Amino acid sequence: MEIKDEIAVNLVETLRPKIKLDKLDSYGELPSKAVKDMSGDDFEQYITEWLYTVYQGKKYHTGKKGDGGVDHIILTENDELEYIQCKREKGVSGEFTEEIVKTLNNVRRGLFPMPKRYRYVATNGVPSKWAGFLEQGNMKEKLLMWYKNQDLYEKEAYEGFEEWMKDRELPEIDLVDINRVYTEHLKGPYGFLRFGNEIGIERKESSRENENGMHYIREILKAYSEHLGKHIDIEDLKDEKRLAEDLDRQKSSYYSAEGLRITANEYLEEEEFGKLKEEIYDGIIENLNRNHADGYDRMLDTLTKATHVELDAVGLSKRYGLVNVKDRKGICHMLVEDRRFGWCNDE
Image 1 (cartoon, rainbow, N blue to C red):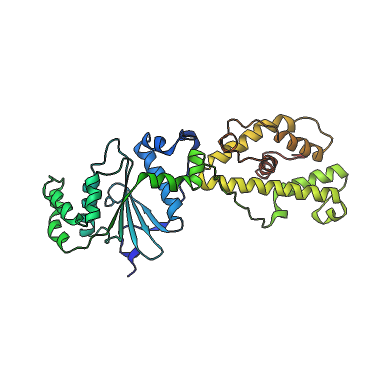
Image 2 (cartoon, helix red, strand yellow):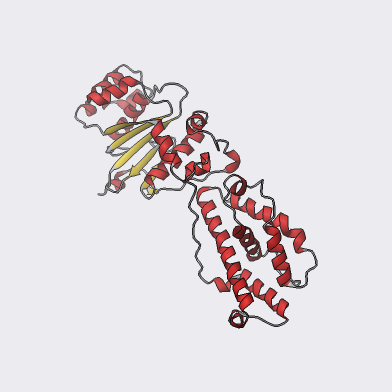
């Protein structure tokens, strides 16, 4: 039986965390200050972003109340389990001992198999004496000593724990320095989105399958036809060099915007790109309703207007500078694709 089949939870591909910009107030701050001011939920979100950055592509599980007390489970490429415990605390950590005893007891109870590694992350670290115990190699002795001196809740759940521990080899225990988390998180895309690092974020490419069959392309061809006073299909553009080049530019703008949409939706809540589309729409709608010579004239005039729409209320633009001129024009074509409007008077 594979190790992942022994776990009492389903491991899935690492899920990419999503950020909601209107709840993100740490942009531009130092990670050390921002993390210490985070709520417990925000700290868990931050840790999940860090884990995705470090363990992207690995099998993964994020715990919840009642599933055994392990916050995160990673299945490495070598089929080794790593358990990761995260704590957001105001003072020096006093829960490290209880958390590892609880985790080991849940291994004894069969909720989880014994991990290869146990990593403990806390914003303010753990007492120096425990780091010393790790260096001396007598962690088991100290854990049992602590266990004997505690009035543990649900004492019956720990029955047999001491005897079980005597014959067990402990997992590798790693006290993760929070500064390491700061550094690794900052080097990834979430470091850019949350704190504004200089690394930036990689724009995604969009597939161009069946592009000539899309609604916005048909609308552009209708605008060309109205402009020339005759019906124009894709095949006819071989004799209309100026319009053929224009169509290539419009396609390039559409796929630039589509790439931005894919990029934004990978890391942010989907509503963030939707806000950008609505800002563009609100900025061009009066221009669309003006009188124009034909659909082609309306399209060119509207695309030009889109390049000047104020986007100060849109984080993708003002905060991250991810929206370029092509994106603005491409979003107009997206709105056409969504049937929000067309270029010709019959729409």
